[in-house]
Image (cartoon, rainbow, N blue to C red; front, side, top):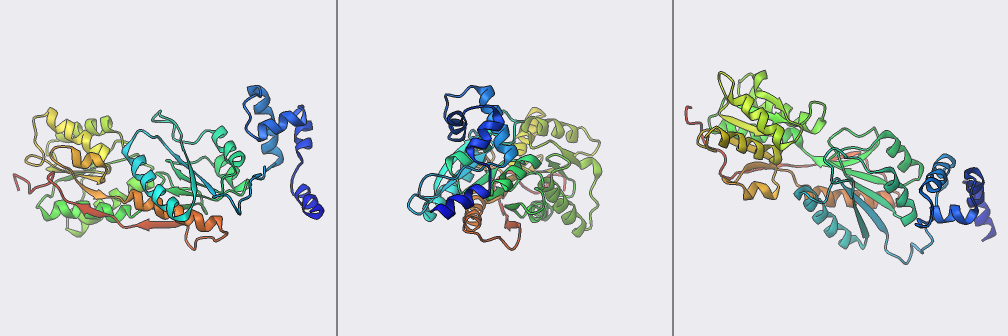
Length: 348
């Protein structure tokens, strides 16, 4: 017991050192470490900065051998169907593994896509054994913070390419783009437009690359004016569709790289008095519940979000046990779900 205590002290600063550096009492520093609320915000920030600078890591007080292991799951928002699909997969996998799960949302504001710093600090206080992220990206500082505290984590299909060494589980985006485009080609479409996310997003870029590859395999050269970007935003996709319809030779089909953007395509077509699929065929990507609810029901490429989340949690569980995946990227297959939004071109 004495040797263990001395070894622990040798690996990091004591609470007394933290308190001295922050200019507070040891009980106050202890309150911050343990997540107590009765500490002034300025004091909490000062102590937290010292904890980070000195690399202090609070060890969980509970017996991990007896208590279920705790995993944090952080999603962008709890108010969208994507998060519902992810949490469905997490719940099933966590139940099978006997894990407890804490769910947090980054924000309800669309552009706030990264976990706040104070949320990360609470992971150590809670004694979480690992973290599953379903967010667009993490900052380099956040990656470093997790590594410094030796907390394993896995990302579910991040929009931006994570730094080297970060483990993620995603979908076969390139193949999905090929599948969507080939479906429209087989129907007889040649004037096929694509609406992607942001220009620098690898997932969207892979779907557009698949679209171009399918056109090339069919002996068709893609038209630059048929490639638009809408940042996975419904209103922006509606604007991009209007631009496509205003071209001298408008497309007869649109591949939207998300179901959300496909809904924007529907709206723009309705504004012009055009019908889906009689006048323009539409294919989406994701197979969210909205794809079934819209009229006509949306043909889309299914991205298996629940299966991706469940797979990510199982990968995380192995990392928590000390195993490192052979590959940092795992991709699950996509497939076309054909519904009523696609048909042969009327002028073809």
